[in-house]
Length: 76
Image (cartoon, rainbow, N blue to C red; front, side):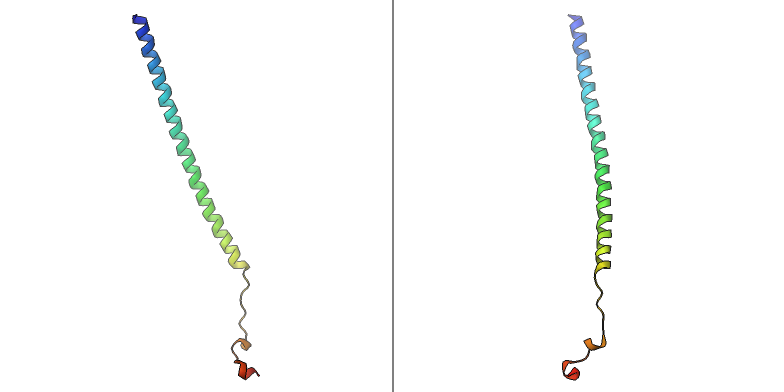
């Protein structure tokens, strides 16, 4: 019977070690994924800025001419 108690204790320790190893691996994976999300969010911000810069550069600039300021009566 003493042998069975030792085996049961060993199994419990193995199971406990396995559980802690699994928890540790999950924590490491979550931390790694969190860093990746942060990197992707920074990249999205950078791309949005570049997109808005391109959009503002592509907009045609309004030309101001003298005839814009002449009244209709005066032009006639």
